[in-house]
Image (cartoon, rainbow, N blue to C red):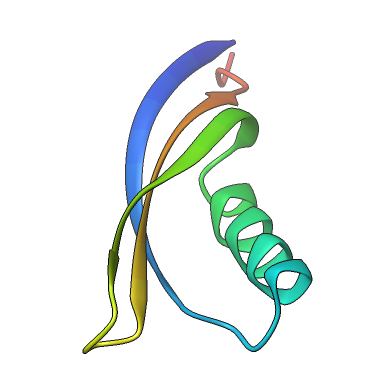
Amino acid sequence: MTTHFITAEINLQETPTELQKAIEAELKKQGEPLRWAITSVDVSQQKATVEAVVTKQENQ
């Protein structure tokens, strides 16, 4: 298992619950999220930047 630091852009959602689900779904594409944080928001483009640490299984 390896850990990776990733950055993702997420479209802002109608509610905080929907935003959290969108973030977690996007991070799952990269691996299993250990932790994540919204580090910036671009209101004009309606995007949030998320930084995360994810784990991935190594291929044997």
